[in-house]
Amino acid sequence: MGQYLSNMRELASNNRDSEVHQKPPLSLQLNMRKKKRIVLSLFSIVFFSALYQFFRKQTIEEAMQIIGTGRKAKTDLEGQVLVESAIRNGIIGREVVNFDDRSLDKMIEENSRMKKTEKEEGKTVFHERSSILESITVFAFARPDLIRYHLESVDSDVKQVFVVLNTFSTSTTLEIRRLLKLFDCSHSRSGLQRKYQSSRGEFDCINPFIRKVTVLESGNRNVGFAGSFNIAAKKMLENNIPYTIISNDDTRFRPGSLKNIEKLFAAKPNSCLFLFSHFSSFGVTLSALRRIGVMDEHFWPAYSEDTDYYLRSVLENCENFHASDRHDRLLVSHGEYPNVLEKSATLKSGGERYKRMIKNTKNKRYGRDAYLCRKWGGECPEGWSFMNSNKAFKAVLSRYRKEHEFISFHERFVSFGENLFRFPFNKSNLRISWWNNGNHAGSVASPRLVNKEYAPSKFVWMESDWSLIS
Image (cartoon, rainbow, N blue to C red; front, side, top):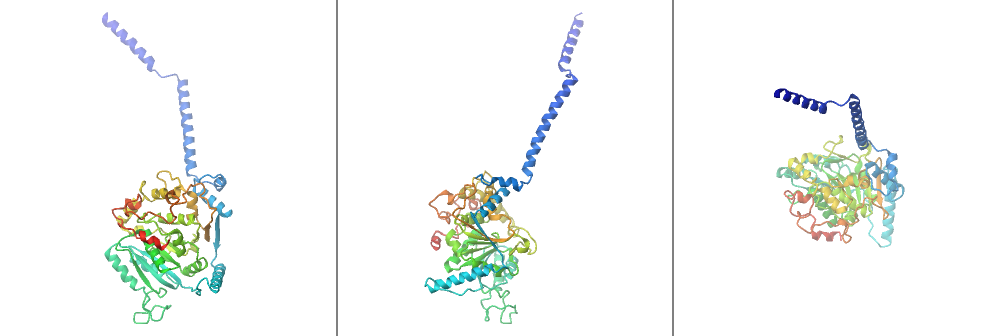
């Protein structure tokens, strides 16, 4: 009897558990599934709409809505719209250059007439214009073959070629030195010739358009792009050289382009920068050095020193030349092969150690963008590049150009809501040209500090050199 009662109680307990765990009615199940599908659908709509908005291209009509708002551009297209609007309204001056319509020749004639007038008034000594280029500078690093290709592309008379020789390896340096002797035409008895002759003739250098080659030493160091620029800048300032064309070794002048480049310098002698292939090949004037100074060597070994330098030219209200980006109008080819559009060969040629140093410059706290943002503001979100944080300035520097053009910046120029500083590190007592070269070369939080293990312990531009531009 006791066993029977125990079995009955167990059965009753099982029935209660079964009632608790039995499935809800079918109608309730269907209703729950329907609600889940609705929630999932809403989530999918929101997610894919956000994904579409993120990846889709903004229309020009949408981008133009930024005009007049004072808002900082969030997209490249908005930055371009703001810059084009500033050009139309005269905030940024723009002058299209056509090498075929004699407009440059007219400017040159006017400049010559004004100089003659100044001479007659006793203000200056007048010299008849020469069509010979003043100087060309090339940065040599790891590839003797690229140096040769670059110098062979010079097809217009040039007074002097400067080669800044950075040390890559002893054997490479020796090979470059041997090569450069073949380009030095200063020993010619007959001046510039148009035809190459053998060593038994009266002219035995490779390129007779080059009158003289001068090696500018880096002290057996790799002083980086900014340091190489500053070596050339010292030479210009010490010898009163009106301008030079500075190029990386992986560039070549297109046939006939140097004739037009010489006209640009003659027509616009007071302009600051001439960007023939961005900063891979560009011209800088003596006037620019005295106005905006030399390059900041805390950007080491390379990258973003050009952004810093260009921003300083904008803040100094300079006039700058930008070459067209159209392939049929290029003045300079950039890359290892002259007829193939490609990126820089320098990074590829520098070896693993050089690539590691470049990678170090991307450090979020001390890298090139972090240093740029500390120096010039621009409200950079953490981890963002300076250029992508300041879309309007990015458009000023690197937007696609169909035509060759001069652009100029007036006192009315504004930073399009980007809150860029007017002075380095937002200190009004500092000049545009200033950068901190007073301390040990590796003591400032910058790409140079990140690469302290490899960077030279001394700057090229010393404290005493400021007197050259003061």
